Length: 390
Image 1 (cartoon, helix red, strand yellow):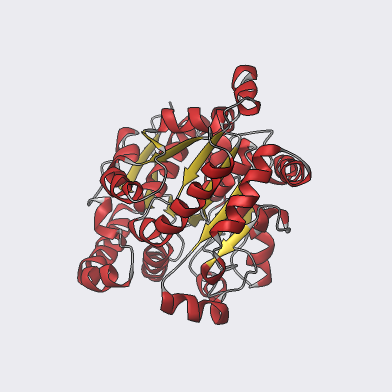
Image 2 (spheres, rainbow, N blue to C red):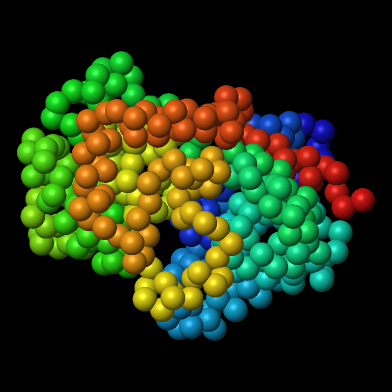
């Protein structure tokens, strides 16, 4: 050590996923920096375990759904001011904003107005490829660099005139070895009875909208493959709702709670029925042929075609630029067709092989080999911090 004061990195994360990303980045920043680092900001348990003392609870800036946003708006606006004031008071060497775009982009604007020379990095690009593409251009004056987790996002951000964007890799790549089977688990995938994952979503609304349809699909599947083993991983906070949901199904899956049991099921599963979301990318990286579905509210479903920029709601399909994973969306959820497709995926043949070949291409596209995404992200933050805003 030279006796110089530590570099000060201010991080603001929203929601559990942002806390996980922030914690991984903090570990890698400490390992790569070659100098003393002090962390400040807003985070959850993961980031606090890495040495961050959060200036307020991360739950204060988490809001899901229109009603919750309206009810919590005074608190959220106050926390925006608190966060910006804390950054200005701390005078850090770099500000890193993690996910939660509606909150963090407004904080960036407030901070840029008061500390115009402070480098600002955004970790996780806003989904301008889904809707509101104008967000890319709007954030350019206030953000110096975006760290994207999907490989197509740098080109999309450039197309919409956003800030300079670098692909650092999806955080799931950090878990690739936990998702893929060893020889014994690979043998279980091929064995009978087949194990099928059931993943109806992690949010209350998803479970409510997809529960009946998923139950019908599984009932039809059981008629055609009587010995099929069904496993439904869920989160502790959703366990009661999941139990209530499956009580009305014609078949009862085995419910597992906890990450270890979930990953063990992933490594042995032959096929999956899943709600659209990050889990479909998890399944693709694990090499599990999948039938995907999604349903949003009635009004949102009527408006969505006029707002969305995409033709698929499935992440692997977006990354591959092809509809490799079959999807049944909104008005087109069709339990008999979905069950029939699952039967074919379990049995083998062309459809199963086509998905597996498409999933294999993800490795090259997403950069599975090489540094972990958290390390790439940390290196990009250090590079931006040291370059300043010259």
